[in-house]
Image (cartoon, rainbow, N blue to C red; front, side, top):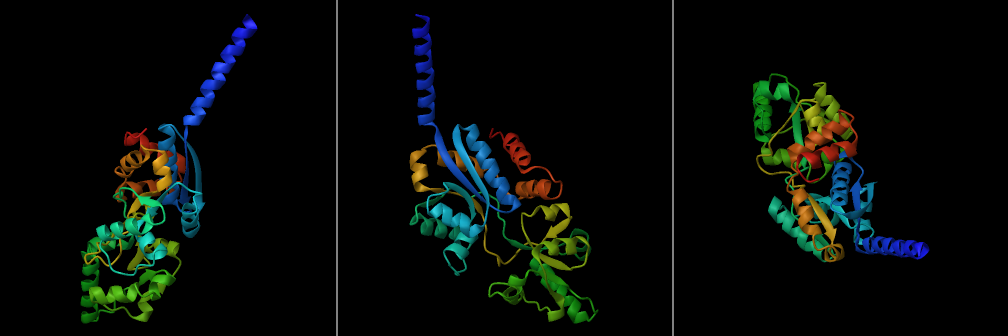
Length: 301
């Protein structure tokens, strides 16, 4: 009798486990190989695990590799930037505003079975930054202010050199530094343009070795190095809004997933992400800890 009871109990337990396993929702999350993407993919993994999903996290990928992996069904969920999809993946060179960019990539990627959910308020686009102290001293808050200051200094002939640090690509590409100067109406001499590794631009700005430099708007070093982001008054730089992108088949298999990811996206913005990037890159905190803190603080887990 005892043996029969144990066998029955074991069968029930195995049946329960099998049922739970059968109903478990399994998703594969991808992420790129820089701090912000490690944070986004990690917080998504923690968030969905708390919702009962079985999650496989595969981050540290190159941008093109991650895209190919999602198109071929190896990744279910990624955080992509609207500008990256528009320009890099879909090769659209047309000048579009942020909402037009989002709608265009949503339409183009739908053909590939990829669904763009709600945009977050995180815009990791190109930006020019100055040392905060220098920007305050000269009253420069925007790219137009910068252009006006450069033109005024040149007109006065005071000999000030406006050293501008940019990466090698931005210095010469057709949508880079040259057209930006044309739009804002200022001119730099060849000796004033310093081409360097992107990471060195931040260090040179911190050490006040540059007048202004090309950065990314949500980089943790903006806050960590006390830099001032200049407003892009005329909208020269395209939007790079971080957005969850999910395979349509994955959404069909998980009816609640879109709503859940949209709730996560609604909590993320540039200011919050800059602080998280700083905690990892400057304060040397673990990605998983910073991601967990964010989810708890926002009431998501």
